[in-house]
Length: 168
Image (cartoon, rainbow, N blue to C red; front, side):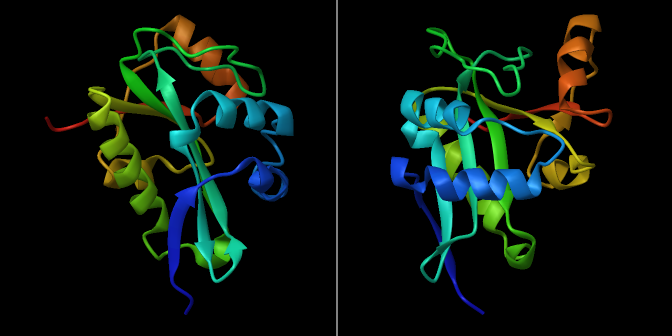
């Protein structure tokens, strides 16, 4: 078994990230330039797990506002001035590397990043029936109002908005 670790994503990692994204999210495609914008806007939240010499996934998070879901496959243009959460846009670990707490390590890193920025919450949209996994990391489903339901629709039928309040 090859050990893995997370490191900050580099612009040169974007082709590998795009290939992984296309493989894992065929129903939720995002253009590589949209992913590149997130890396440019908030490089600290963009990381890749490395096993041996290979990129085996990616994590993308950025400051945002609670209960506002960034549009899928669209540009953010800029980050909010008064962010009150880190939005975990995506965490992907290739299937052959799952079960090794790789995603949990990313969530822990992002929680540390949030606390250092004096941000008290993480937020995400759970897709593909991953709600139980996110609950293990401390996320809780938020009952959607009509506006939130409309935004969740672009993420698929089973999409759930979830928030994790970080301990002080």
